[in-house]
Length: 220
Image (cartoon, rainbow, N blue to C red; front, side):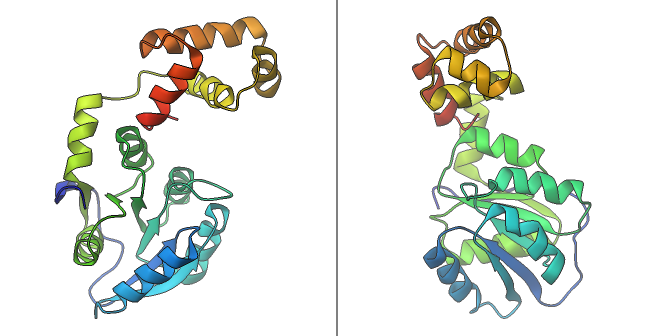
């Protein structure tokens, strides 16, 4: 992993007691899921009890197998992992979430913590670091990749409003102002205003540059 795993304070009561920690793996890449399952099988106190290949299947799997921990990828079909984490939090489940992703973007960390995630690791973590993070999150700690936490402090929180993010996401698809307006049910003038505001906040000269900056920082 690109940096040590660190504790950033307690994040509530642990979902389970002592004994085996039940884990659900949610990742759209079959090989990655199977590799993680095989590695975790060597840990005597961790059991993989379910898997999901789509974000919109995770909640049903959680309800079915009642894991203590869900390891969530961000980029998945159906729903992304950040949205899934929010759903699990709203559902009031005792399951705790660790985001495990290829994309170590500071904004993703900020959004994951807002969504109730108790951990955030990148996928180049070693197996023993992942197992340790699972145990610590299960015990009630918050575990975050240190290098990503430092990057988050440098970048700061997103300056963009939710609607500005919506407009930039639509702009990323390459449509015209009219296309974006139709997609978001806004007037063309309103779309231009949102784009101008977003570009000013992140010091972008063009909307394409604004999209690149926002995506690089994990704000979209």
